Image (cartoon, rainbow, N blue to C red; front, side, top):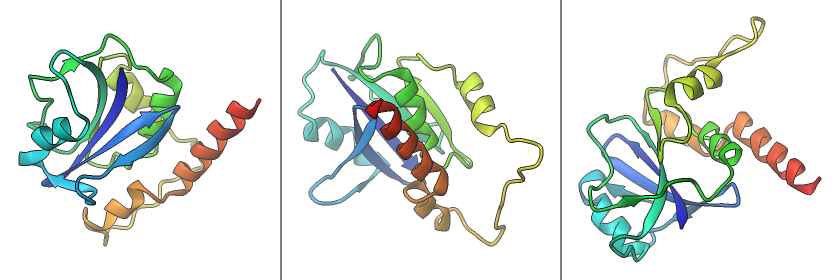
Length: 158
């Protein structure tokens, strides 16, 4: 059983394997992104999905119409620790997007409430001049992501 992350933004989709709490990009003929229309067919072909094989998926999407292929069998649980799954979700910029888990091991409402809480003296910094396409780079490079990775690495060493 393998855990995957599917990130959908605009008309493009991207996939990752989740291994020991770390995400590993899946490249499709060298490309990181696929069109949403071709995603599930190409994804199943790339991971050599066999009918009936159980997988767990975290889907981060901005399009509520984009859903899991009905031919994919969802596992009963994640292979990774749920804390690691939450940590990986935190690495993504969830602005105008939602995170869904299949299986539903992490309650979406509780997760989103917790992830958006801020101490009263910490105000979010938002640049209104950024478009959604400009914010795509923040998915990979953010100070929060950096420190989450360092914290998880430190916890594993203990």
